[in-house]
Length: 339
Image 1: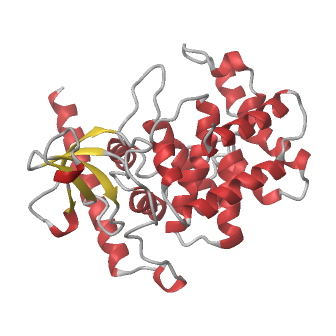
Image 2 (image 1 turned 180 degrees about the vertical axis):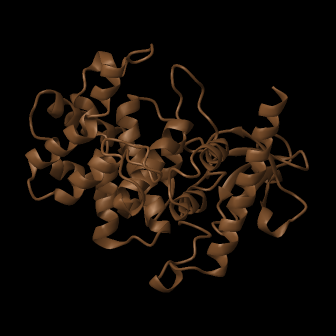
């Protein structure tokens, strides 16, 4: 029996075929998928675990679904709710829909792209606008987000080189999560990164590409160590992340086993936010579906309009991100000088 994730991929494949055959995409079906994602994420992180587990399938299709799931989780961290959150979930599902209008052989090309080929690919956001407005001329907001998903805060994106607040916030969320998903997904030319490695990459390489409040929300909501990740602690013990401390992304709750065989009778939960002398040493395995029982979302304080502004928590987390970034950048600079 197919999982909901697999059925969603099938629906997205139907949308892709519609684009290739120059028919209208099934926008109502996609809206239904978006509604399910929002409802599910209000109850459980199961879809987040599945998105981060490296699900098999077409990279283009899994990327659309993963950006919707992970982007919706980031949106929750930014205070999105109701229709606004539903719109964000839908935007994730179609943010790269224009790619299916690009010749397949070009998308699968393993060698370097020619300038003409790169230009053709970079036109896919505008093709996405045409696809969306063709199926529903009233969806101007969705067309705008789709067109701007590859624009960047520093003005180095495409297709119109917009920058800063010229870019729709939903497009910035989709853009950041799109990069994150690419980093944690396996590709023919490189292995997948662990989520914490992807976060480090974003903080160093993309620090001026996306606004810091969205970077902060991604770290806080998806965690450096997502649910289901197998980690080794500084004590040498091995365990699985079973809860996320959104206030302390580097210090999740880990279910530790006396032996790596995972004997539940000898296991216990260790909240690293309460054990300052114990920390995660390394990630051993990425999230695995079914590795943990995913129940109600934990350790995530309710968001209200009063807490969205500058707060002690916001400031301290940004300071932590800056400290991590500075440290990592120093390491990179040192390695460059030595090489």
